Length: 246
Ligand code: FPP
Image 1 (cartoon, rainbow, N blue to C red):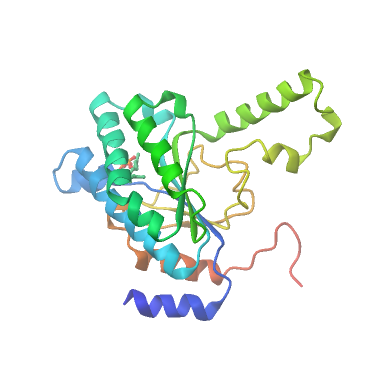
Image 2 (image 1 turned 90 degrees about the vertical axis):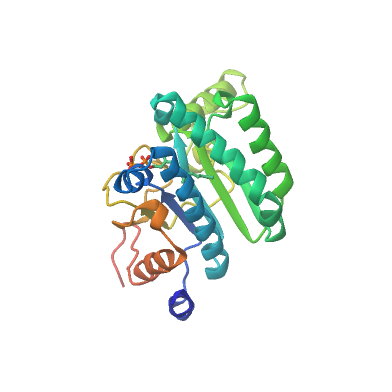
């Protein structure tokens, strides 16, 4: 079934180069099964594997996943521990395969807030998969977009204060170079699962012209088939970037 959809994606041409996903609904998935919330996150890890495989099959070049926000630090300690444990488990299990498939993993966010063992794991996977050119997989962890933008402003202010930068040189391109996402083009497509119509402090600068796709599917149920459906929907859209169509 997913093969057929993949064929359609290929026939339509223009695959989004950069797909960003707000993975939402793990808690509701667990509640629906009378399971503890961490089991919803555990099931969500399977969906991460699915979308990585789907992006490789479809030819998406950059996949940016919102895995843990700065606001998520306010969740109960056992849930935070479970999420950090899952991140370490994902890295331990997948690092070799990701490297084999030439997936280059980067972690975007305030890594200073991570505990020692999560920090070591993320540094290990970044080094282990560095240079993987088939797909850039960005995991946003301890990430908030406003904090990222404030950090970029601070870095530019430091440059100005040190006499290395003239404020007149600060334009959109120069600013974007201080964001975590500097190496990649902006997302073409933003997918949010579980039906919520919010951006939730995710890539506020970078999503300026992204096409939005919201699906009621809860994240743990999301498969590559759902990804291909989202891409097909994107391929039917007309992107004008503020201009008129010709
Ligand atoms: C939102 O669901 C999801 C998260 C806060 C965490 C996403 C994490 C994973 C999918 C685990 C694996 C990730 C990696 C990168 C290995 P929610 O808890 O807000 O759900 P709810 O809105 O239904 O309560």
